[in-house]
Structures are given as structure tokens and as C-alpha cells.
Image 1 (cartoon, rainbow, N blue to C red):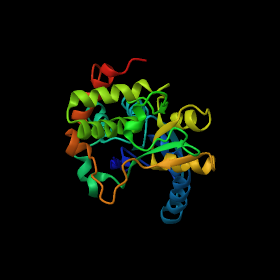
Image 2: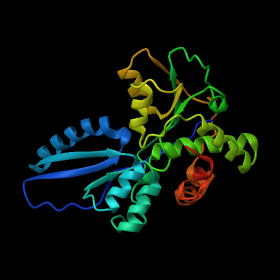
Image 3: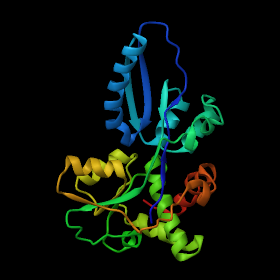
Image 4: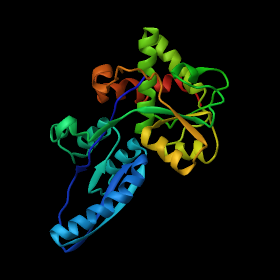
Length: 269
């Protein structure tokens, strides 16, 4: 089952420039490291040409939820780009740094593009992993980050939940499916990039639940060692949205990921 992923646009928190040369801090989530390494250079060059000023941009990366908490606790970000609308909302609610209607600022709820969850498997796919049901089979080790700290992990979790709910018809059975899936997770890293390292460099796991950009990064850096599987690929796709299927990130967060939520109920390390 394919699910749409909205990656949130950069939201300017505050910026006051008093000198010709200045620094910016972009606090972002794990899989954007390579993107900003290139984008920051292009932005600095463009700004120098158009504004006549030199800008230096520092990067801070980690799990989306962890980064949101760091900003709330005082990390002085100039720009925040996070994986979940809910993490942006929390910064606005708890720190008052972002307007409540930020999603109305730009088209498509201020999301610049969409993507999907894919499976990254070992070369030749020895466990023959093709779809979500294969993830709960005995002997299949699944790599995914911790939904308590990682935005990408919450997308993985909710994609699996939506698949199970549609196929098996009840929340009780969906909960059982998620519990069985996480019993097959040998380690929960705090962020998506850490899970990429666990799977690709440490060689742990049979399948890695990943955003497409992380999957392609693995294939570029470890050529010939992995294969990308898009689960439930059909000519006409039924897309899962957080607003339509889960009532928005606020409801999804409270029900599934807050203390005592469904994830805490089903996951026993």
C-alpha cells in the first residue's frame, strides 16, 4: 500500500540582519543532510549576487520530534524544516514561534513535494519481501526508527496501520498487526539516518522501511547491495493521507504516539 508523504516547507522563524556578513542555523530532520549541503551553497551564492551580503548557513539534523523539542527548549534556529506538520504545530503551541495558520501560507498546505514509503531489501531479496504482510512473518528482521523521536518512523507506522486497518477491518486487528511488526524490529534508532546506518553499514535487518530519498541514497553509496520494493504497486493507487485517514497529526499523535498511546501499548523492548 502506497502512502503519500508531505515533506514540510522551510518555515522562517525569525531573522534580523545587522551586518553585511551573518550566519543562519537551519534545524532539520535526518534525511535532509545531503539536500541542504548542496542547497545552502546555492542559496549563499544567490544571496551574495542579489543582496551583496555573505551568508554562512549551519546545519543541525536529527529525528523530527527530537529537533522540534530542541527548538522549544531554546535552540536558536533561524529556519526549521521538519518531517511532520505536528512537530511544526508543537513549536507554535509551546514556544509561540510560528503562526497557527502556517499551513495556509503556501500552496499544498506549505508542503513542497510528496513521496512514499518504500522497502529496501538485501540483494536478490532472499526473504522474498514484497508487501506489508511479509514484515510480520517469523524470521524477518525489520529496521525502522523509533516513532517516539522520528518523523519518518511515524510515517512508517501509520502506513502499516492504514494497510492493516483496510485489509483486516478493525482497529483491534490493526493493533495486533503493528504489535507483530514491531516484534520483528531488532533495534529502534532515534532517527531515520541512524536506521539507514544500521541497515546499510552495520548489515542489520532484512528490510528497511524508508523514504524514497534515503532508499536512493543507500543504492548510490552501496551499489549492487540492495533492492527497492514499492509495496502494493497498482496502476491506480489508493493514497493514505494523515488528514483524511487519521484526522490530522494532532489526533494521530495523541492516539498513537503520546505517552500511553497505542505504540506504547504494543511495543515492549
